[in-house]
Length: 200
Length: 407
Image (cartoon, rainbow over all chains, first blue to last red; front, side, top):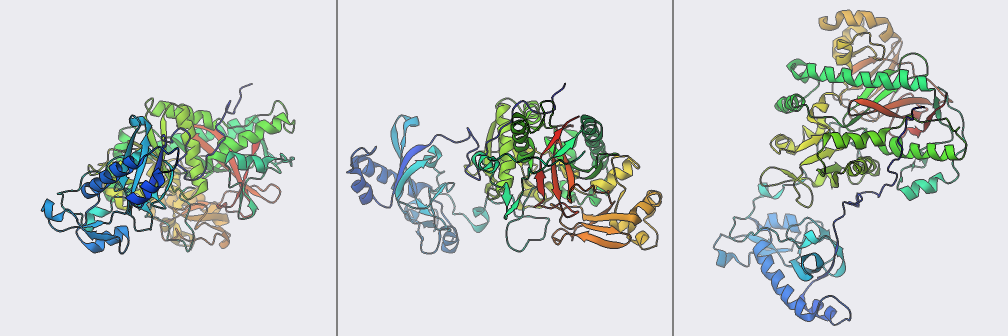
C-alpha cells in the first residue's frame, strides 16, 4: 500500500525571533564593552581574561579613531538627536580638519572589544553610540546592546568597520531611513490594540 | 468521513512545549485538540480532496494566464497599475510557486467545494506538516490507531523536494516574517527546516528590518544582500508599502512569486466561476457590485447576467459576502433567505470591494464545523490540515484537528 505521509519531518521549533533557525547562527565571539578606558583597565587586572591593560589602551585609541572616521554625520542636531536620543549628540570633532561643512555626530559612549579567533586570535574593537530607543550600537547600527558595559558573545560582524563618513556630506532626513520599508502597509484598517497576523 | 473520540496522548502538552510548539493553547482555549480526530477513507482523500485540489490549482494557473493580459481583471483584483508589469513579467518568466492552501468545505459525500485559496501566506503549516504527523506516529505506536491506518501528509517531503527543484544547491534564502508573532515565526521556521534539508542556506529576517542598500538591493538586518526572499507578508501589502517602488529594480527573487498576488485575492473566486462555470468543486461567485441590484430584484451587470440567472435560486437560498482582501474570516457575512445569519465582528477589511459566493453547506461533526485546508506544494496537493469551530465562520482561534485515513 502506498504511504501517504512523509517518512520523517522536522519537529523542533527553535522559537521566536531568536534568529536561531538551526545552522544559521553565526559563530559567536567573546566580547566585552566598556564605557571608558579606565573601566577596561580596571577589568584587565582580573585573572584569566583574554585582554590586558595594553589591549585596552590600543583598542580604545583605535575605537576613538574609528569613531571619528565612521560614526554617522547629520545635517542638523535635531536629526542626530532623533536617531540617537536627546543630549546624546555633539558637534563633529573633525569638522575643522575635514573642511566638509558643519555637521553633528552622536557622542562616543564607550567601546566594545572582541576576541577574534577567526581573524588570527587578534583583538578588535568598535566604538559605541546611543540609539533613540536607549540602547547602544556600533556605528553600523545593526546590532544593539542594552548596556555599554558587561560581557557576552556577539556576532563577529559586530566588529566589521562601518563605511567612512569623514569628508562625506552629512545625512539629511531623507537619507536616514533606509529600513522599515516593508510591514507598514496593511490592507486591513489598523486594528485597535495588538498586532495583526500577517498570515492566514 | 467521521470524527471518532480518541484518547489524548498523556504527555502531549509537555511534548508541544519541548518541541517549541508554544501556541498549542491560545488565550486559555485549546488550539491543538486531539480529543477526537477526523477519519477519512482513502477513496475520500484521493478522489474527493487530493485530485480535485491539484486540479483546482491547475485551474488557478489558467486564471493567472488570463488575467495577465487583461487590464480589466487587473483592475478588478485591485492590482496597483504601476505594478502590473512587474507581476506579468514574473508570470512570463515562469517564476515557480512554492506553496498554498486551498480551503474546502466537504462532508464525506459529494464534491468538495472551494471556499478560498490562501495562495500567498498560508499559516498553520507546522501543525499540518509536523505536529499532526507526530500525533499520528505516536497514536499508531500506542495502538490507538490501527497498524494499517495512514495520514495524508507528505507536506514536509514535498517542501524539501520543491526547494531542491526551484533553488540552486547552496542558494541562500531569507525568510522574512513578523518576528514578534510566534505562529508566523513557526511557519517560516518550518519552511526553513525544509530548505536546509534541501541543501539551501536559510536565514531569518524580521520583516520590518529589511533595508535598502545604496545600490537599491534589499538587505537583511546585518546588511547582507537578499538574493532570494520568502516573505510571510501578503503581496497586496508589499505592493502598497514604502519600498514597493524598489521591488522590481532590487533584482530580488521573491517566494511566493509576484504573480501569486492574483491568486491570494478573493476576486479569484468570481474569476474561476467565470472561466469554469458549473465546475463541481466551485461555488457560484460574483463581484457584489455586479449583482447587488439583482439580489434586490433588479438586473445584474450584463456581463454576468446569464451566469447569475443560472445561480439565482442557489444564491437566494444562501450566500456569503467577503472582502477581496481579508484574513482569518474578517468581514465575512452569511445570508440565508435574505437575512444575515452569521458574521464576524472584525470588519477591518470591509472597505475593500466585496465578492459574493453561494453558501456551501457546512458539515457539522459534534457541534463543530470543519474546514479542510488542502496543501499545495509546487503544483500538487500533498496533504491536509483541518480547522474546526462551533461558529460557522472559521477564524483565527478555530481549533486545529488531526486526521487519519482508515479504510
